[in-house]
Image 1 (cartoon, each protein chain N blue to C red):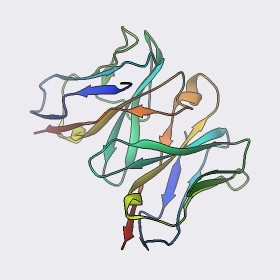
Image 2 (tube, chains in turn orange, green; image 1 turned 90 degrees about the vertical axis):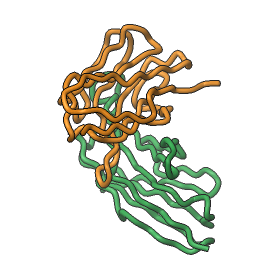
Image 3 (cartoon, each protein chain N blue to C red; image 1 turned 180 degrees about the vertical axis):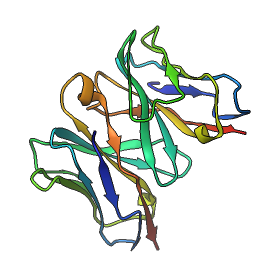
Image 4 (tube, rainbow over the protein chains, first blue to last red; image 1 turned 135 degrees about the horizontal axis):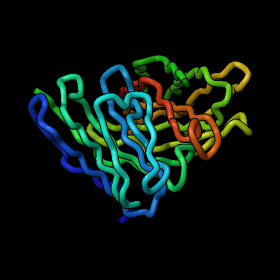
Length: 113
Length: 116
């Protein structure tokens, strides 16, 4: 089954403790992206990747890192999480660009205490 | 960068009525305009999209219209049903395969409630 898999679904952590949210797709998609969803603010793009080793900032990249060492994986790294990063995070992928249908993962609800 | 405004933030209609959600965008280079539906606790899913070379697109009870001159586009849902209740997001993206063509900017969402 074609899908985007995110883990974990729920995560509670404390300020400053490094964490990684994993994202994997099995559709051989070139484009992958991370979004955060906050009430009243919609979905905001954090980082995106056009292909292996090609990443670029979205609209809200501060405090986040990403890597794209393999085509199928696009982990989101929070080196030193802060409470303002408490949010619902979605990974998404599409065949080649952001101008096509995005397939979203099931989301990761992160709480930073 | 692109700025997308979406209205209304909440919309309540009676079953069988029509619903219209409107979005405006700021970047005249934007040429791709998708709409996503997000049911409670679920992931967003694409329901329809339009590119700037057409003014209207329909898919059964859903239609999207685009006015490039005015920089606005709208989602129209006819004969609404309870299963249409969800949050709807519009989005806009500039064209091309690099840079701006990969930054999809979303609106803030519309909570649609279809009442029996």
